[in-house]
Every structure is written in structure tokens, then in C-alpha cells.
Amino acid sequence: MLFKKKSKITLDPQHLSLMEHAQQRVAQKKRFHSHLLVTLFLVFFALVLNFAFEYKADFTPFNTHWSFVLATFLGVLLLIHFLKVYLFYSFMGKAWEIQQMEFLLEKQAAKVEKIKRSMDKEATLKATAEWERERQQKNITIIAAAGENNALGKDNKLIWHLSDDLKHFKNLTKGHHVIMGRKTFESMPKALPNRTNVVISRQKDYVAENAQVVSSLEAALAFAQEDDRPFIIGGGEIYSQALAFADCIELTRVHDDFEADTFFPEIDTTVWREVWRENHDKDDEHAHAFSFIRYEKIDA
Image 1 (cartoon, rainbow, N blue to C red):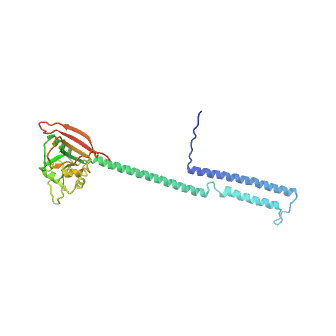
Image 2: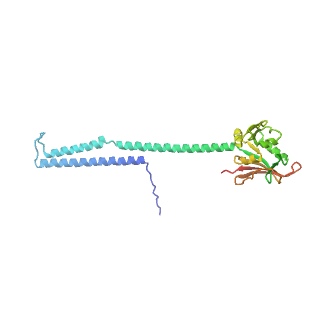
């Protein structure tokens, strides 16, 4: 047996109101037609009684029979009804027009609110996209070489010499801002060439040759805001501060433990994920095996 599913029809409130007024109009006309028929019948019946029983009187202003008074009264009521239905009452009606105007205003306000919400949503999405684009374009990177025990250096000097690591560092940082602490800068013979050197120092009168001196990491990053990938190159305290700002870590992991007085902070694997690794064995030019490892911050 086949069953036909009934479809539910939903009418627009404006169309529903129009239907209701149309139905009211039809009912008014039906009532008028009924009134007309009743009036004609009563007038005819009164006149029949008048002529049948010869209750006629002379047609003078002060001597008119009751049947004609009744006919006149019924005729006046019929005329009033006619004028009300066909002349004084428009199809829509003033009240209906006011109601429809209010309905349209409410509908328009709802549309404006919907457009506003849509614009707010679009603005939010645009701002989020802009922020994401800026975040992707501005890739703040920590670059470091650390032993298995996170050793960085001792007595403000490097513990090892790995030529491939130096080439790796040079290739990545060339043309970019390199941000460092005062001690790291002073451990170098001079400012790194082909890079913009930014030195962080709390000494107000500190001067660094061929370098920009700032008072904080935030100030250094603000100075490097035009660079799409500024690098933070040390030392240990600056690395610890930079973890909150950085998007990427380029770490050379030297596969030995070393005695040191400066250490790289522990990498939290719930915050950072390894995305690339390149292993190098020790050889005649490299006394230690090492790996180039790239970490990226996990999105919250």
C-alpha cells in the first residue's frame, strides 16, 4: 500500500494577512447581499399588506402610511450599508495598511540586522585571515646549536666547531634581522655581515658597533617588524624569553653531552612538534654527530 506524504505549506505572514482581509471582504459583501434581499422582501411584504387591505393614504408630507415609513427606514439602512461596504471601506483598509507598514518595517529591520551580522562575521573572518596571514608571513625563528644535555656554551664561547652547522646558520640568517643578548654579541669578533644585528641590553648607555641596541626582546621584535623571518640567536636567557614569541625553532642537536654554563631551554613537545630532521655523522671535519631539526609551534 502506498502512502502519500502530506506536505506542509508555510505561508508568508504578509500573504496570510492578505488572505484574511480578502475573506473579510467577501463576508462583508455576502452580508450586504443578504441585507438587500431581506430589505426587498420586507418592503414588498409591507406594500402588499398596504394595498391588500387598502390602508393607503394621501401622499402628503404629514400624512404618510406606516408601510412607506418602514420602507424608507429600511432603504436608509440599506444605503448606509452600501456606502460602508462599497465606498467608505477600501479593500485594504487603513488599519491594514498601517499593519503592513509595521510588518514591512520589522522585516526590513530584520534584514538590516542579518546584513549587519553577516558583515560582522565577514569582518571577523577577514581579521582572523589577516592575522593568520601576518602570522604566516612573519615567522619568528629561534636558531641554536645545543648538546644532548642542552649545553650551549661555556665562558661565553662555543664548545664545538662544526663547519656544516656554521654554513647552515649563515644560509638561514643571511639578509634577516638577528636578535641577540649583549653577551652573545660580545662573544663574536664583530657584527654578523649581511644581516641586521639587534642587541638587547639593559644598559642605557651601551653602544654596539654596526648594531641596533634595544632594551627588551619585545622592542627588538618591533624593530624587526618589516622582516618576514627575524632570527633569535642567543643566549640562554634570551632563548627562554623567546619561546613565547617564536613560531619556529631551527635546532642543531649535537649528539654528545658537554660541560657548560649556558643551556638551551627544554623543548615542550606538547607545544612544539618536530617537522623536519637531517642527520649528519661525525667525520674528519666534524668531531661530533649532529642533526638539523626544525620544530614548529602547535596551533592552540
